[in-house]
Length: 325
Image (spheres, one colour):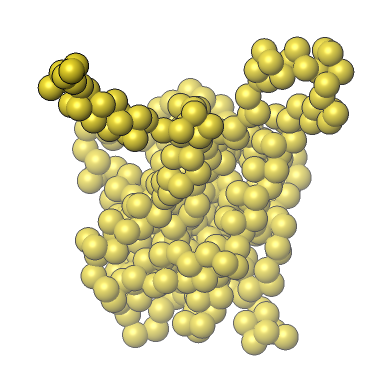
């Protein structure tokens, strides 16, 4: 009588367990590319830089300075300080440049804190990220070799979609960004009006100067007659240049620039020459010296020059405009 070796039951059990652990042959295992796509689809988008900086300001600054305003579907942070006088001269709305926030240390932050001592309310706005900071559009991946062969053999039934137009995408982005900026300026002006400001002045620093001028050229609000530009610049990809835009505005305009940089000096000269050609009656240009080694003195110089302009060149709104008529 033959005896079954003792090893045989254990071997059978091992084979059975191994076959149970392996996936069925018909099951489809996701490819690494599919796993990567799934991870991208569920990954939340990173917040805009301006949103992150606004959250930091919310934690750092006093609650009474913070005003959350609504621009369309977006809620954004503005920084408000009332004038430290019994009869305020009006409100200055500050628009920061691309590289700074509503409390930017270079110019906007010091100005918004100093202006109330000069008799002006200050309202500094958070602007959305500049257009060129937006994440690039994802282009469709090229077809695989199998798909290419199928297309050659006539197996593909659908024609490939047209290639995206980068120029059209860039134009759409710029338009969307401009609309967001304009909506936030609208909200800031509406807030200033609610405070019964006797005058409203738009002050733009860097690319914020472009947006202030562009807003006034497009919207032409009846109760705003004063514009301040500080180190004015045009954001990348936008037009027209400021020497075409600013001289056409029938506003009391203070154009403050730093003469140390040749490019800034030449751009300021073009604006001055253009204003002379159209005989702009209330365009004033002020050259300043940059003091990078003594930032506090530079900021005080800017504030004193601006305060002097506000004292000498400010234009009041007509009574009918102030009353909404």
